[in-house]
Image 1: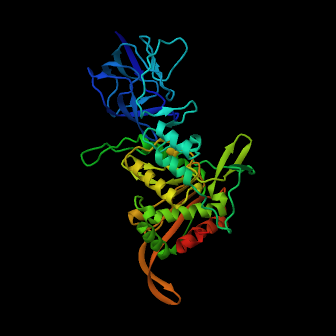
Image 2: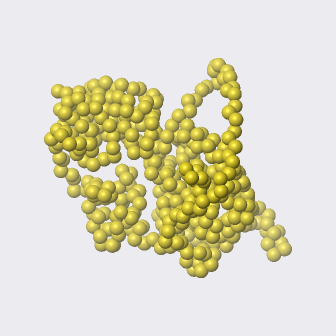
Image 3: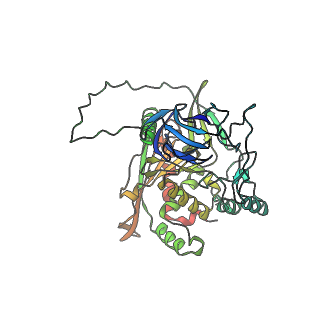
Length: 444
């Protein structure tokens, strides 16, 4: 009987370390291939690592709560050396008995044993698309190319809702006063070199010894990544913030009507949905807020994205996450509502993947759920703008010369002043406000 050593893998996001959150096995347990061994937390997500071997667990080489480097040995398994060759993300393992990790398929490895998949097993095509056979048939029937569908399944597979939603998507940009989206997704604008002032490092502050009146919380995982990103953003992007009060009474009326509509019977509807549509609409009219500042070898550039990967800041038990809805500009009201609901549920359950958090172009933070009116949020790294939606409450408001109770909110935002000037920022926030005041502007 041979012994295999499993090393902490790079789970496909370029991580250098991860925390051992919870072991799912103990010494002496019998495990099969693809049984979950351990749950780890990276800088972006919680990940369950499956076993590449079958056999008996020998030793757990690291403890729960430990932070270990990629490539470090974490567990040994005494087994038969039998493996499968199901494709998977590139991982690492040490071959000590002729066994290789699931998905390695290198020349000269031992003969592998194929397991016949169940009838409803997820089937992966050579291009990496994961979908069950019935879903593939549905896609063919609806003339949908699975390669163009964003998967939302728990295992990264394409679901029925993904296919149906993709087939029914329609552009929201049909208002004749709104510019059309171009065929080119990005364009690069060179900018003149400018001096960048680097803040002087501060001397370390002595930390008092902790006693019963204090506790020390290690900074790692999501909190560590968030802290690093926010400091980098605050000290590299000159922030400019603006805000305006808005009479959102008609937005509240629309939300009420949508909740009563059969089309939204099984989908959560909130003012955030209208806010998201407003941001997407306003982005097209002021595209620089959706750009990115790029420090290139030959000088700085501004990259303008002609698409919207809409980030939604989410406070979760693991910390602040900013998953984004890919190509949100292509979703109709129902599709956007479903995407927002799925994003929220996934974040709350701690199942947000690194792919869900990468590639964002502009972010919304809904501080209104905490009772806040406005703020000056820090821009998400890699983006140029972040918009905050304040709480919506009844306030006295002057309408046609008379003071009336109206549903009022505040729209605020922070922007990278290297990329967008005050007039662009003001126009963008004003456009969002105009939609919240009169959502009918979104209609044809």
